[in-house]
Length: 250
Length: 261
Image (tube, chains in turn yellow, green):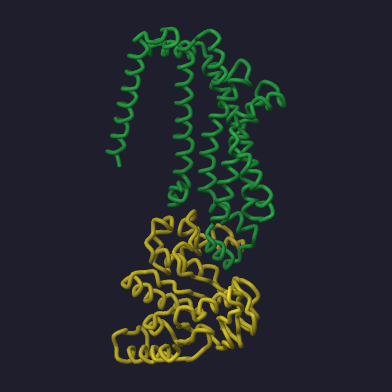
């Protein structure tokens, strides 16, 4: 697997009041197969940073490298999962959604179907291969989106609050499933969230961003063994530490 | 699901029954000369004659062929045009003012000109359907393309889709609910246009022509019979063709609401 290097990245955008700096001098690395959570208040530029890594936007300053190669636009070395359930194509069944990336790569139909089935099995949805997105619950749709982003075998998985719109119970379930999937696939994961407990549950490392403009204010390693118990003292200590950083950044 | 449906059928039957009865009372009341208010029995008999001698099928065939040809041409022109408008702003800026001005003109207002240009016969009727059907198709397709969820495009891009693949695999199916809604409107407008056009521009065949021609001989039973056929055919196509199309696509994908909007 390949890691991500973010080197002195800045991003400005034009607004009514003039040029706004959304990100300033952001630098950190994500190790190969590392699970990194990017935490910050809304408006701190964490989604912007993810979009830069995804290649949807070009950085104003600095450079982003994946596996040593500079990011220029979108690429099949990255899979992206968004927050909105509507990211799936409604006119395609779950399986055909998962096949999309492979189709774009020109993979043959039989191999495509087999790979899609394998990844649907990974997210425990093989039985729903023929279902259309609107027939699936929100949590199931996000699982299809994860399978879809993994199916064409990117080195890096970028996730933008994928579970934020789910109810608490489903979210817990999805977090457990994601840790399993990550353990099996060993992808490098960059995961954006504003939920500190979620970050502590999932991540090897948590980067805290401060708002206006977004800069890195803390880089916290979470060394708790998995599976993690969100009610353990050690877990709550980690959470407290990160909340402290967030509070200091206000 | 079944019960409300059965109720709807019963309701429709009652409505038709009451209307038929009201007509019958009016027709036999003598308030207008019986020659121009034929009772149901005479209308049915006229229809029966036309079905028995096969002329009704020829009229229906001509009318359906004209609207079919007109709709097909309108689809071939309107859908690509709407797509181009949605994708390229200069095309939108060029086409939209034209469409906005031409669309409110009733297609029948063009009949005299179309006769001068294309002569009496099939061409004028087909051109009329094309005119009537074009704008709903252009406008709906354009709306559909503009309304394609940005997230679908982003997701497709992140999976390595180029602009051609995005168009084919995302924009086209994403806009389809609107295209189907456009087709539905196009058919409704085209159906009015073809019958109206045939009254003036057709020769010898067509449902519109037969109504207009019957006026010469005061064949009101033929007129009313043909009107019934026009109504039933319009409803039939709407229910069979478009409802089936929607079931297979929009409804199956759970996009029904956006299609109706």
